[in-house]
Length: 279
Image (cartoon, rainbow, N blue to C red):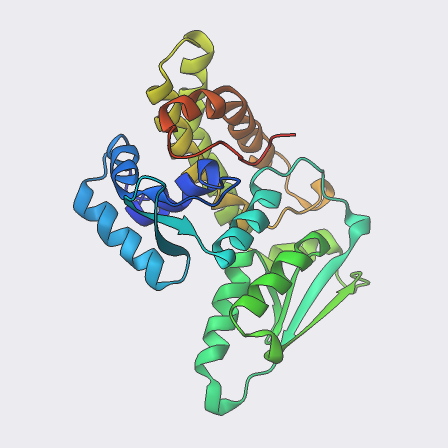
């Protein structure tokens, strides 16, 4: 298993892809062990990771209809996954005319630990740093930013604004200061190197098993879902020539279309599929 695919991350990806059931029924622990086992994760690692997610308030314990121990998503976790869907499965092209959202924060010295938390959380949401205490992102990230800051009780320290960049440097030049575009491009290229061959294999041999589809899809999803957070989704005219983000998104979109529903046949009876990307 690739180093980046930690058990905890794979569990989040599993719930994100297949775990949002209409009745919010808990997933049996035995099922989680089976499904993570197909990805190379042993049972003790599954149990340990589930415990950590429970402590973070993302999973809540419960009993299945048959009385088995299981875990369901918390309300916070559902909000987190729903917000993530809008990025992971985004189809709309960003437009420069949509403008920007600015996060301006001030934290009292007595609570300076929250300053670091704010910076790290804004960076994980895809914000770039325009100046000390001033962070910027495409306006489309406003709703998720608001939800995240409220969930973490950081909203009292932040003011959010919408606006346009009016100068003095050209916007395409400024974004090169606000974000490390070379590092983001490298992540897209690594995704293409890792999952492009997987897609080509499925194109040549589309009759693979449900377990193979589940495994390839979960690994692709677990890799991809980080990228829309590292990459804020800048309009095309602000990106360097040959930007690899478009090709990487196309590879993931085709893997999603080919593999997700087939993989669901292996996942059941985890729950009725109610995943993102469906009409």
